[in-house]
Image 1 (cartoon, helix red, strand yellow):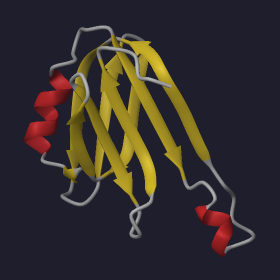
Image 2 (tube, one colour):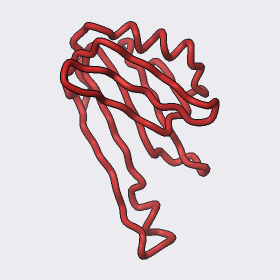
Image 3 (tube, helix red, strand yellow):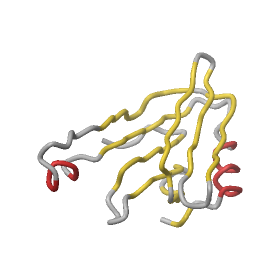
Length: 117
């Protein structure tokens, strides 16, 4: 993966506008939190192969952390804390955010074909 280049990622996001696409969105601190603090709560969210169509896509950020949003007819999908990106597979966009130790904290993937399980 490479650090987010806002113009390149924006262009990739826009390539999916007004198409039926599949989204993978995941957030986690997983077991990371409880390993070091027994009072910490583990939190996370996971959705894979949600078929959506969005009319607008935007990535914004400050050079260290980015937020990507997808505007649908009746709402938004967004991921915050993104730092890295790549294209893989069949034109699948992968955006991810990692903590200081390189552990995955958030990911947003968009594809015109369903993701494998």
